[in-house]
Image 1 (cartoon, protein in one colour):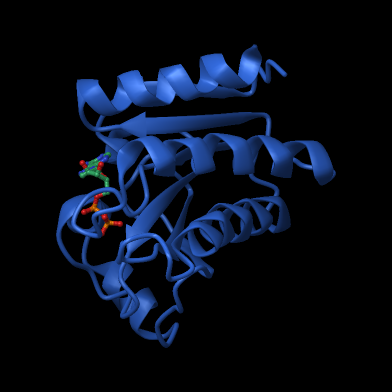
Image 2 (image 1 turned 90 degrees about the horizontal axis):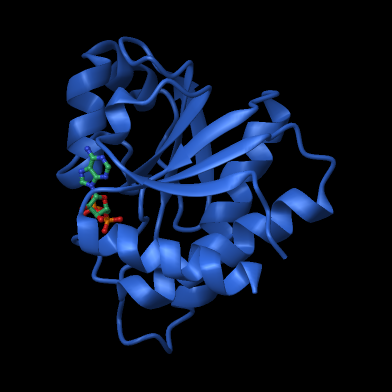
Length: 174
Ligand code: ADP
């Protein structure tokens, strides 16, 4: 299946002019390193004030805030699983992140959304496996729900990650 709504690019996710960007947050939602730190820096200090009111977020779940100084109107914060070898529910939890984020997007009538490569930085999820889950789960969500989403961008930070996502998208199109 070739879903034209899905594509991969290499960019800093904080610069993207989409309705919502997804943050690979930690369970406190109070900021951290990697993409989380970049999003908090770019959105500005009001973001952490709103996040404090949310009471954290469990792994596999998602919560929405405003985008503040970002071009994006919303930030969807989701907490990916830490990789512990793959036999500890990691694939189901990662799938849950994509599903919960896309459900929130629909709830808020988002049409364009960008995802970072959740869990594949500090959390150590192998990129090939994580990208496969990202692409397949997203495609299934767009098919199965009456989705408002018209465009999903997989925003890669490195050229090699982009290559992996592009391969996954090609495999899905075959
Ligand atoms: P996690 O804790 O879920 O592993 P990380 O932030 O450590 O999250 O990494 C997730 C992915 O986000 C990695 O591929 C990392 O290279 C990437 N990343 C880091 N900064 C940015 C950014 N500004 N825009 C897009 N992706 C980013």
